[in-house]
Amino acid sequence: MTRFIFITCISFCFLPVYGQKTSLFADSIRKEYKIPELSYAVVNGSSTVELAALGKHSIGLPDTATLNDRFHIGSNTKAMTAFMIAKYVEKGKLNWTTKFFDLFPDWKNTSKPAYWNITLQDLLSHKAGIQPFQGENDPEIPVFKGTKAEKRKQFGQFVLTVEPVKPDVQNPFIYSNAGYTLATLMVEKATRKTWEQLVEKVFNKDLKLNVKLSWPENQKQKDTWGHSTNNDTLTPVASVNDYQLDYTEPAGDLNIKLTDYIKFIRLNLNGLEGRDNYLKAETYTFIHKGSKDYAMGWFNVYEKGKELSVHLGTGAFTYFTVVHIDRQKLIAYIIFTNAFNPGTQQGVRLLMRKLKENYGS
Image 1 (cartoon, rainbow, N blue to C red):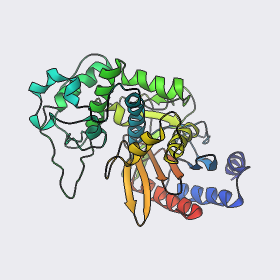
Image 2: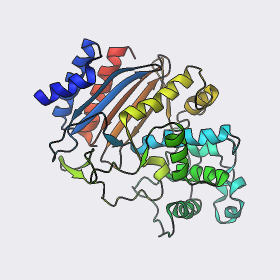
Image 3: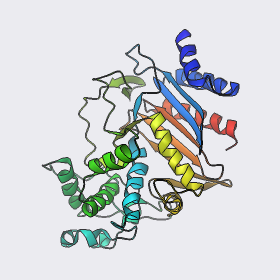
Image 4: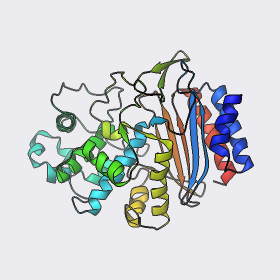
């Protein structure tokens, strides 16, 4: 109990009393649903309203959570990749309507004709009919050789030979990690830089967000461990675990501190408010609302009179990160955890509901 009071004091000495009560509720949720570490934030365009880091880096370690901890954000990487691409659309390197085969004409003859007119926007909004490539029932992927960028290129060429998936009324878009690889190939071709170099330029050099690739390096320093779940038993996963995302890193393979992720979300909030920053306000509007159901890295949700941008990431089923942006109230709710299972999902749902009750969303 003493440890938790100490963490709470650090995180909440500047917050309202009910913010402290929320942290107690969040920690009770964490314990009940056996979540090793849970960090969360409530953010508006000018300030961080609530912020806490609760629990431990791993079930097998004594070191406690801090606001310096890094989390693998899984598919929340998509919003960052789309944001990065948007910068180069603004620079005129390519357009949302640029066709894939305008940049890769030599690939056309070996690709399925159904793909011949797909655009950058189609790929980022999952409207191109690309197979999901999410690890379940995927077509067998050949062995590719070379650098990561070279392998992504070979993978992209292979993906376009695979039969497309047709959307229907129940599935108006086909959520596809591979689609984000193809979109990334387009910006790599247009800029002559790799995705890794573009991440470094946009997020680290320009925005100072200290984004890193793949898992938090928990073997080199104290940091979060993801946890896999088998038969309701959590197992810590070391960062040296050789997990491969099958060349879809731009769809789901970044890690970041919650405090830096807040800065990224605040850029989006300010842009949705109509203010230019790293991107133009009109670009933020397009990123979040430019396509029905799923826009550019964000689920575009309209329900019960509310207007939301929503996404989650599972970190290869070892982390679970969720962000909801209320586009009307211009407030965002962020929850980071280092496990993924039905219990984690339920705990996150309950905490998200509590935070929205507190702030009227």
